[in-house]
Image (tube, rainbow, N blue to C red):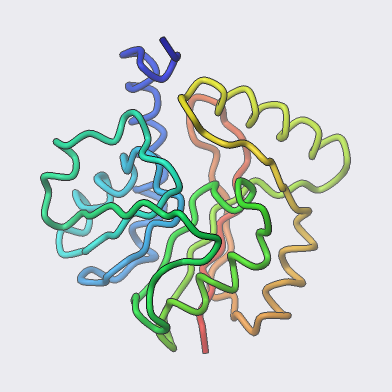
Length: 203
């Protein structure tokens, strides 16, 4: 049994998702079609629907999370796609927006996948990036250790841990021509880890 199977884990994860959803909902227009990149159990997506009931959210991940239940996917506003390639299999300019919630550091190339999110979002659309970004070497060491331990609680989750420094992401936004329209941070319970939050617009 993995710790993620335990009721207390599910309860704490739902609480974390509520925190994220309440923080992100004001950044999203109701009625948007959103890509939830690295969606995991889709708890946050479900919470967003409570706050923005006209959203349509497509979850994408390389595995189906053990806690992504059929009950969650019975909501017709939610859908799930299993990704088996190193690109996002969606047409250009397809979504109104995309969310990458503590996900990019689990990809083999965060800069490339940021460009993929940009590709599949329409002009004028947005990317909401929620990511633990290190500010120094010791900070990076700490968040790598914490994230590795948390993800080992779940079945089959790869943990490449390609964290980037905060200044590296800021430069990458410029390199890709993404405009920052919001910058903030959130510390979800129970880990209270600092997550930078950026809303980026594709021109």
